[in-house]
Image (cartoon, rainbow, N blue to C red; front, side, top):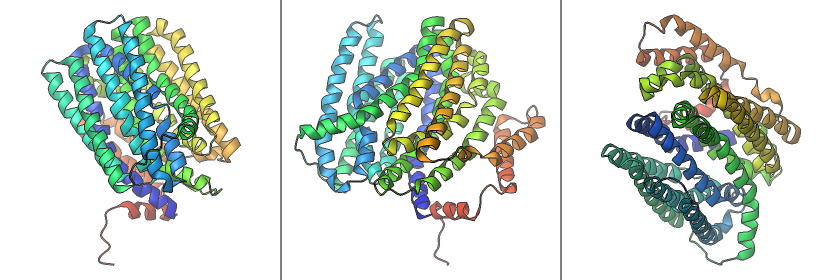
Length: 481
């Protein structure tokens, strides 16, 4: 129980920075979509997809392996900071050189090549270093510094990006804003890290670099495949059906993609615990995984219900009537959070226990299914073909993650048996159905959430242990006790 409370406290802290990212990043995406139009937004999405792959290639899975290894060997923190900072800079510069060569051969105009290069520099050097520094905070389970700097990063990028975008700087302005946010936040991370956790110790230990690089490689493969899983459809639709279809698919998919910040934030706090207890041979992870999957189900099910129930209104409110044609894609993709909120904890459990080979197999199989289906369906159905292929691949990934966790970690599939949140979601949706035409969305949303919460409580979804966990992380004064 104490483990659950500690993890819940870390989740609360990380959510502080996650709130800014979850609120401002989608808002910025909406502004870009409205400012550039469907065709321009398709080009922006294509550029952003390329920028993200540069980050994944540059970091090679290093942050995840640092959390796993350093969580069990905290006394060696100075060596990790010193040696791996140099290693990360060298790998980032090497990747940036490859990016430069690729952009020279790129067929796009210089107006597109220069922003891509600046995005590559931002992601490969500054954001890459920051993600490495954040992994050390995670290994020590002190997420408050990461949350603070994350908020600064998002605020700078959002503020500068909005100002430059609305002053006519387009994609170049967005690239400069990303560089500003990444540079400032990276510097803050390094200063806090070296003052609070340890001084860097530079030994330029080649065997250590080699061991960490080999250990990180599976995580790099997982990250790369996950990226391709998430963004390949946008690229394929752009190539097969044009920028307009890519913009319509991306407008719906980015709403789903933004929701991934919730399980990612939760697992940022949970993964160090899973890595730390692994070396002790403890099986305490069973209770933690059960709780995490249950709480995430309580979040994902109503979110998916709202997306499916109000897809046309959500698309119109966020992007305008130009994107209204995208609502069938959002309706199709609405079930994805139900799948992803369940398989992400299981994937991280496998990774923490050195069973990343199974994670690679599961993610690679899902990505291959997604790619094959998209190539088959997109020429025929356009952006709806991409939506169907994405949903099918996500369901496959959940099935494989559940199977591997059951066979190799003794996590029974009944961990997914969260019928009470599902029943509460259906009850709230049916109760709101007669009100959908009469109430404006601003009133209907809180009504739905209140009805959902009431149904959860009526079904006794949360027991005494859940309530003790909740009280342990709420800022309630105990002075009067």
